[in-house]
Amino acid sequence: MLMLALFSAFANDPRVSTSRGKEGGVLVLNPRIIPASEDPAILALAAAITAHAEAVARQARPDAKVDARPAPQRTCPQAGCLGASIGSVLVHTGKTCAVAAWVAAPGQSPARALAWSTGLEVGPEPIAFREPIESHLKVHDYQPCESILESLGARDADVVDALKAVSGG
Image 1 (tube, rainbow, N blue to C red):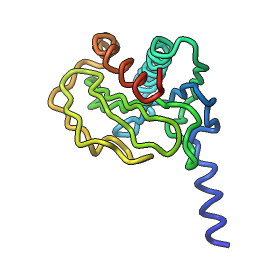
Image 2: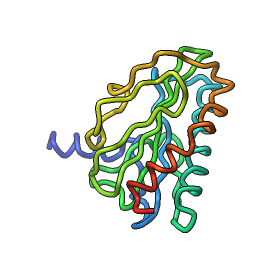
Image 3: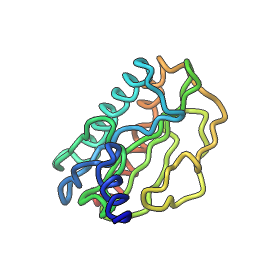
Image 4: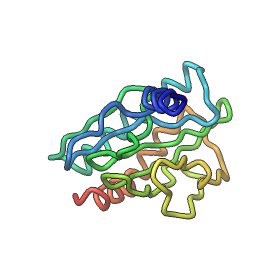
């Protein structure tokens, strides 16, 4: 009975995507926010990062079905996603931020992390399926949160290439 209760609690976790996406598609997941925050400015930035990740997914795979999940869905279900997945981590100190992206092939595949904003070091890889990537990040320098999206745009090509590599695109 206890095991069923634990499974039910995990199965209803709002951070887990309620969709596995489509085969051959891309599932866009919301950022993990470190430390957790209910600050409206941080939540708005997280939403903007998700929208940016969706645009990157469409650039990488223009003919694929792209499914952007609503907040707070930030991880694939335990069975894995049917298509490739892209997500991110938003690390903040109030007014300064750093962002890493991650991409994964379909299924219960390990993830590849990328420094999406400047001032980040990523490693070692690969990152096991559903393992939080923040333990693989070292932030050397934060940027003002209001300019973080410009920083992401400067590194989009790396994320596009990584997403193409894991999704066969």
